[in-house]
View 1: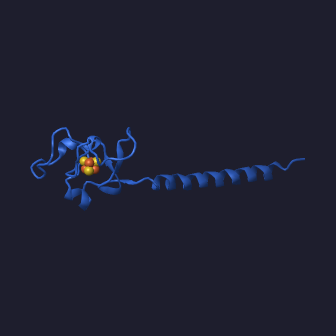
View 2: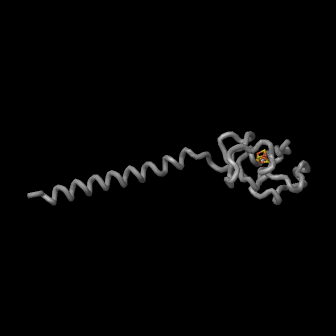
View 3: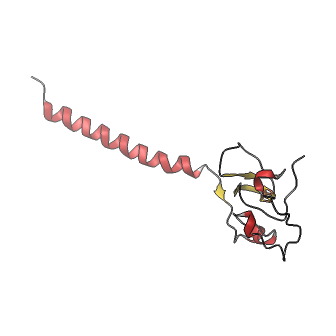
Amino acid sequence: MIDRSVSRRAFLQTLTLSTAAGVVALPRARADEPAKLDPKDPAALALGYVEIASQADAKKFPVYVKGSNCDNCLQLQGKAGNDFRPCSLFPGKLVAVNGWCAGWTAEM
Ligand code: SF4
């Protein structure tokens, strides 16, 4: 005869360990993703970075050109289709494709 209490206990222990491992693994996978650039970061402030290009301070940054944004900037990297992508001016951070900063360089 099968001892069902042992089998059930073993199953529940395995399930608990699997669930715990899954919970631990999920944050680690997200932790590998670069953080979004904080517009209040000193480097971002220095270049007038904003997440919405139309909110750029054109008085403080007269280099702003209407219609310019991260999505049409030469410095933007990564795959098209993502709302936040790497930028060569802010290594290790993601910038908004709808954003802008004074480092904007027209695509060729
Ligand atoms: S350099 Fe270009 S892609 Fe990077 S934050 Fe400035 S405008 Fe956006």
